[in-house]
Image (cartoon, rainbow, N blue to C red):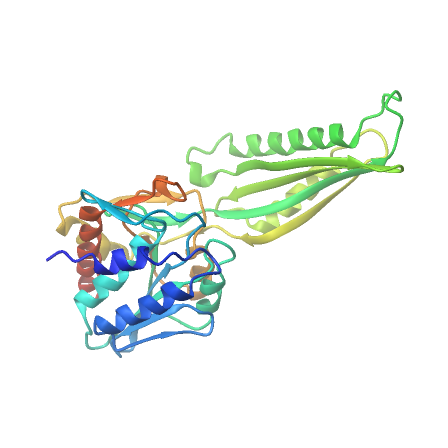
Length: 355
C-alpha cells in the first residue's frame, strides 16, 4: 500500500541550510512513530534513527537541508512539488520508509541520518564521518529510482590575483586586468590539454571562471580571478593547487606583475565506488525486482559521499529517486510512483544484502 506521509511531511518542513531544526525534530518524531528502536538529535544537529541492534551496520546518510527559496508544497496528479522534494528529501524519506518496511533483523543495525548543512560545508556529514564505522554505506541523492551512482567529482576553489604598480594609461604597459586575462587563458589551455585524451566527463577537469574583479589606487592596480574546478579521481585538490602555482610561475608576464593563488572554501577530493561489491549487486537485484533495467551513473557534482567514503572505507553507493536536473529549480518536484518504486527497491536491496 502506498503511503507518502513521510515524504510529504518532510518536504513540508522548509529547511534551508542553517534552519534545519524544525525538520530535524519532525523527522525524529516520525521515525519514532514508525517503530525505530531509537531516534534522536545528535550533537551536530542531525536527525538519527536506529533500527536493530546487530553487529553489522548499514548507514543510510541523506541530507535534510535544502537551498533557499520556498516552494508551495502541493500534489498535482502524481507529482509532489516543494523545495527539497528532489534534492534531497526524496532520498532521505525513501531511506526512512524502506528501513521501517524492512524492520529490525537479527545481526544487523540500520542507521538513518538526516544530515545538516550539506548545501554549505557538509557539517553534518563531517561530524558523522568520525562517529560511525559501518560495514556498508548508502548516500542519498537523486539519480532516478533505477540508477545507482558510483562516483562524484571533487571540487576546489581559488582566487588568482595579479598585482602590479600603477602606470600611466598611455605607457603601453600591460594592466593587471589584461595580465589576469592572459593567466586565465593559460589555465584554460592547460585544462584543455589535460582533457584532450579523456573520453568520459567523470575523468575530466571541469573548469569555471566564477567571477572577475579589478580595481586600483594611487600606487597599485590589481585583478582577481575566481577559479573553480570539478576534479576527477586522479587529481587531488593539492595536485590542482600545485598545478595552478606552476602555471603562474611559467606565465612570464610583462611588467612588474606579482601573482598569487589563494585556495578558498572547502576543497573536496573526488570519489569513485567499487562496482563489484555485494552492496551494488543487492541494488541491481532490487531494481530488477521492480521491473527496472539498472544503470550506473557517475556525477559531475560533489556529495556527502566525498566526505564520508574516504574515512569509512567500506562498500558504498549513492541512491535516491528524483530527477537531479530539477535540483535547486523553482519547479522542483518528484514523481510519487517513482518514489514508491525507490522505497521498494531499497527495501529489497537491504533484504538481499542480509542474505
